[in-house]
Length: 388
Image (cartoon, rainbow, N blue to C red; front, side):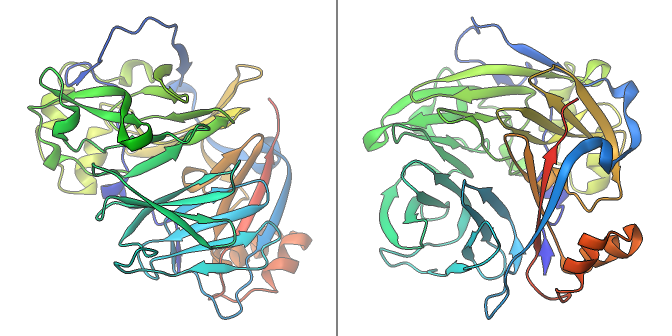
C-alpha cells in the first residue's frame, strides 16, 4: 500500500506567465500578493512550533483494504478517499476511523463509473461527486454510498467543484475544447450552470502552444469559505476564486527573482520535459508551485526551487508566514494533505508511523503504532495549527 505517492511527472505546477496565458478581460479588482521570501527558508522547523495539538486516527481495516490514496477530502463528520489506481474505489469513513464504506461500482451501467479521476463533496446536501473523465460524467452518491444521479458534461476535465447553487467549476488541464474557443485561445477554468450553460471562464491559454508537452497535474480545489471555491491552476501564480456565477483572480503568489520571465514560454511550454531531471533543472531558474491549499484561516504553498522542496504556511489573520523544508519529528506530508480551518489532515502508512513512534518515543504515538500492522489501512493525522 502506498499513500499519496509523489509522482513528479504528474503533479508539477509553474508560476504565472503572461507570454502564453491570455486573460479574458482586464483584471479590475485588487489582487492581494502572497510573498515567498526564498532567501529566508529555514531547513527544518520543530513540530511543537507548528501545532497546538495532534491526533492520530487509525482507519479500521476489517475486510476492506485501501490500495493507493490518490484523493482525500474531509467533511464535518466524514473522510473520503479515492483509490483510482488499484481498487478504483471510493471509501467513506467516519471521523473516528470506523464504519468504513466502499463504493466499488466500476462499469458502464447507469449507476456505475468508468475511471474515476477525482472526488469532491457537496456538504450542504451531503452529496459525494465522482468525476469520470473518460466517460465525461459526474456520478453523485450520498454520504452513505447510495447512488443519486448522473450528470453528463461536454468536456474532458481533471478537476471539479460544486457551488452552493449547484453550478460546477471545471479545471480543463490545458485541454483545448472548441465550445469555449475565443480569440485564438482556450480557457483553463470554466463555470457551467444548468444544462451545461457557460457562466464564466478564466485563465485563457494560447491555442498555438503544445498541450501534449505538458505533464498533467492534479492541484485540487479548496473551499476557504462555504460560498467560495479557490484554485491555483498549472502554469500560473494567480489564485482564482469561484463564486456561484463568477471566476475572479484573488491572490498573486510572488517568488521574487524566481518568478517567470519572457523566456518561460519557449523554455518550458514548447519543449517536452521527459524526466524528473528536466523538472529539477527548470527549478534552478523558476520557482515551481507544486501544491496550493487554502482554508478560511491559512494558505499553504509547496514550492520546488533549485531542486529542493519548501513549504510556506501563510496566516490570513495575522498576515505572517513561515517557510521551511521539513518538520522535525513528524510524519506530516503537507503537500498531499487537506486543510480545513486551522486543522491539517494527512495520511501515513502504518510502517511510517511506527518508525516515527520509535524515534520520538511518544507514548500516545507508540500506543497507536502498536495497534496497527504494516499492511493495515493508513492512519489519519489531524494537526491543529498554532497561530503565529
